[in-house]
Length: 398
Ligand code: PLP
Image 1: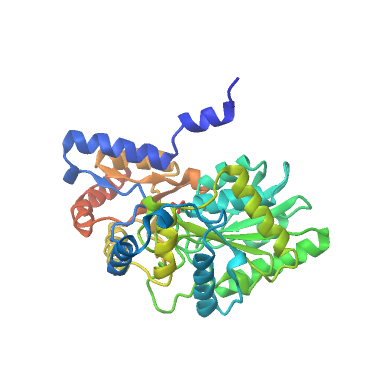
Image 2: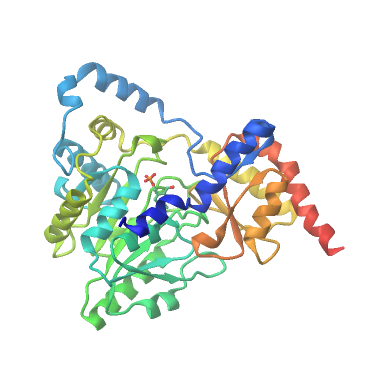
């Protein structure tokens, strides 16, 4: 007998992927330019020129046997050392190479981290709206997922968070800038989350890890928006990072886990990360891209296009009567459905060739996600469809 759970996971696509596949068929049928595909979070700006130049230089100057050879399971020492130094210079931490484990992107970072710390039956708290794959990753590690709600601005409901912590709570996952809302948790929220976890852990005599999933860390649009670095607020924190979005390299599968060295059991946790990586077969992340991020880890793609897209789309949608909280980061906006059922709204949007992801799988009913990491020209073409969609609801009322 096969593993039924995994067979089912393989057969049922995520709602995001389902819509993306629908979009591909629709584009083949009516032409690419007539479909307004806001489904995937695939960066639409290229990697910085320095990335291309560094790749060429690495290929031209490195012995190919070394370049295409294995590194240490946890990643090349010099790569981890360079990333630790970059983080220390930006965030005032004192990390070293042995706090870092190189991975194939944030999905691997999260999966490894959860397997490192979770025992069967432990609880992992996620805060809505959340990246739907958290459920797959946490349940795959044997955890029970506990969902905490948010306020009307998509900030964590801190009372529910405090009430959700039990003696079985092993970890809380935060994601800021957030997919799907684009909201950034400020210092105040992070301090309060840290206080709740510290207090509950002492009361329950437990250890609670704060996992910060931050593939969008550098994607913020206003100079006053700061993304607090989690390790400076909570000692038992583990950062799951990826260069998929910040360097526009999602297909290259490169990222890392950083275990804070402020926690007393850091060596045990890091050993757990190495062990989970080994058990899952996530050893020795792609070496060419390890060497690349060693040289380019402080850089970010040109995100000015995302900012323009955000502003253009936000202003247009609001003028058509849609309700949207202004996203401060990432490249998503979470739009309130004009009817209670967001799936029905997304289905109606499809009639106008607009592909919007219903928010139910993100743990928030009544919203759809728009990924605005797209060509600005597509946004311009899509506006008449958004207007017609809004008008169709106004006509319903008349
Ligand atoms: N976490 C969040 C919040 C994401 O949005 C994504 C991808 O879109 C991931 C994790 C997975 O990132 P990666 O492609 O680096 O595995």
